[in-house]
Amino acid sequence: MIPSAFDYTRATSVEEAVKLLQAAGGEAKLLAGGHSLLPMMKIKLTSPGKLIDIGRIKELSGIRKEGNRLVVGALTTHRQVAADPLVRKYAPVLAEAASQIGDIQVRNRGTVGGNLAHADPASDLPAVALALEAEFEVQGPDGKETLDAGGFFLGPLITALPENSILTSVSFAIPPEGAKSTYLKYPHPASGYAVVGVAAVVSTGPDGMVNDARIGITGVADTAYRAEEAERALVGKKLSEQTILEVAALASEGQEMASDLFASAEYRRHLTRVYTIRALKRLLI
Amino acid sequence: METGKVNVTVTVNGVRRSAMVEPRMLLVHFLRDGLGLVGTHIGCDTSQCGACTVLLDGEAVKSCTVLAVQADGSDVTTVEGLGDMENLHPVQEGFWEKHGLQCGFCTPGVMMTAVGLLKQNLNPTEEEIREGLEGVLCRCTGYQNIVRAVQYAAARMSESEGHREVAAAGDDSGEGGR
Image 1 (tube, one colour):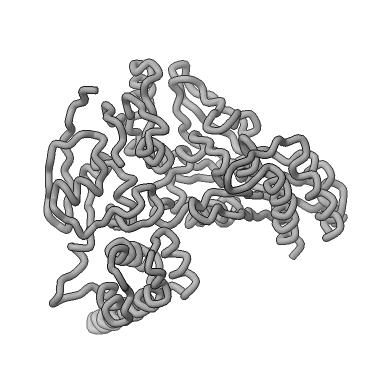
Image 2 (cartoon, rainbow over the protein chains, first blue to last red):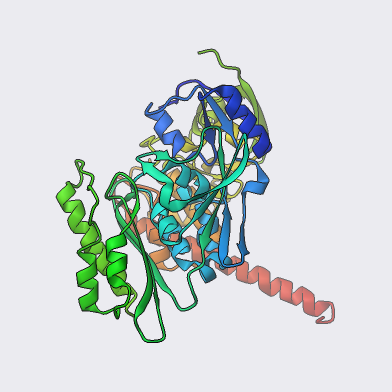
């Protein structure tokens, strides 16, 4: 399968890429690793007239710690994230999720920025971005701005990324010392995408009670979401099997579950509860 | 739609190759149709089966999901560049010794994936090998022997790596053990 014909331009800087986007008048798509875009172009789900390749803009790659946040360049690959010592130390849940995306070949090419900007509702990283209260640094014709993960994912493949803007980096909040976290998913057996994926970050105070809980859930609804009801129910309680059973029942509260050939909405609601239980139980140890 | 062709230069198996291609040309077609390197197979064409896996700058990638223009300026290794009958790559030798193939269709991609895996992890556990081969499908379901073949290759490669280290250590002591 071959994509429809398109014009190709390789941008050497973010500024140039923004100008190219403006000049294309909405006809262009950005190409980074291409592992979300090219498969869609091959089956003609999308046929952009122009591709602007940002894959070689060096400053968009790399991982650094800035205060209590980890800043991951948009072009950093999943493989780099999964293996990075800073990520493994300060935000292990991000490395855990990155190591479960696709397979080795996909992780060698797929990028963090491409993945999040593509906003596939079954993608793994959005759950982690929500649980680690990510901030998206974007650059457009009017300069730079920062968008919160909470308002970024608007629908399937739809984000709050402004027109003619480029996601340049994503910063993840480093959980407080002693916080426990995990990412657990039920992968679709063919595609590897999450039928359900649960990212949980839980902190406990000196009194043994949960003082902060963030749970990001992907794969089951139109977009990844924070399970706020479950989070609220967890705070102030001791993390125990009984508490987990109670709060997990709230994990799909207020969410409309997606339905497809593989999993009905009812099944997805069930999976959401079960995988929230399993994810939180991992934090008991 | 009229689109301009672009020049692409890729070093394939150590040889610099240039061509004017349509931007939409996939790397796998550049290799197969452009260069006649048909050892790289097309299986599913939906980024799942891994039959088209090659090394791009040393990393295993699915060449059906990379545009030829994205590989411009890079090094590509295909199965043709791994070894030959007189001098098999340890992974090829492993597939030979452990009967790591049945119909053989997935084999080039599996071998390139294994080479990429062993570059990242020279001493993988069986579980790591199985996880590492997640991106390749064998429709003969001959996975047991594929895993054995990769284990064989890993042992051979770490053996020769060990020899190199011993030789290097010997050199050091020859220089006065600094």
